[in-house]
Image 1 (tube, helix red, strand yellow):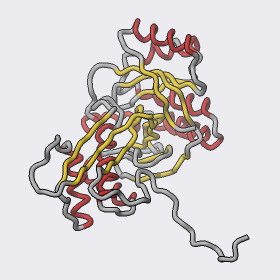
Image 2: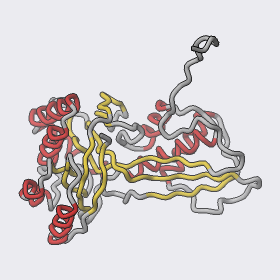
Image 3: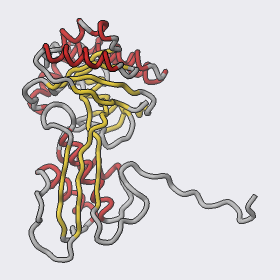
Image 4: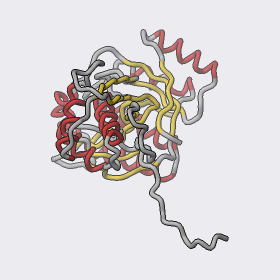
Length: 311
């Protein structure tokens, strides 16, 4: 045993931030995952004044933001940030009283816009994570939440775990851990959804069906508490079915009717988006993937496979 005495506790890594300083003059990056819609979207509790609560469904698809410093000033030599990301950068710099050094931004994303994969929120979070690293600042979740609150209704992609989250108030109600994961097969239906425009419709729907949503959320949280993916999948299917009454997906009924044929544990949707697909607690075999692809093709859609959640 060492006689040097106890060593000081070293804080663990923060999601999206490396502890080592960046090499001088090197490119800095921030990365954030997107979502496959939600496992739950509805009121936090039944009542006449509901708030939109979500349990987002993280997916292994990402948004990247890069910043490369330059020694000379001048206009950027690569595409600038998108409007919301540029606003996030300005708010970040204002908060800390900083000025961005000369340099060039570059972005890349695997997340289509407007379909329910949290593309704009992931872009914002990736931008902020990049800036924390540009200035070698410790990652502050409260700063991220404050910036998001000034820009848009959002979800919990800034966390590396499931969470019950109030999207309008930007408040984490309950962290749900990383024990649950699914394999998915999904399609993207045509069109886009304007979340802000449909919010009044959603709130009216939540008032009418508050008790059903309460049972759904209770069952979902029990599934997370017990580490039971099948229970989570059942609750997610119920949430998706409730969503059909206000923002229907054209393929949902057919997916539901054929779920047992493919051995899927449930059906999920992007409640305010265009995604619909199957949840599998175990990886589908190759022949099942072939059958799924043919099935979705018969509906006029290309099937995509992706890992969702953690577990």
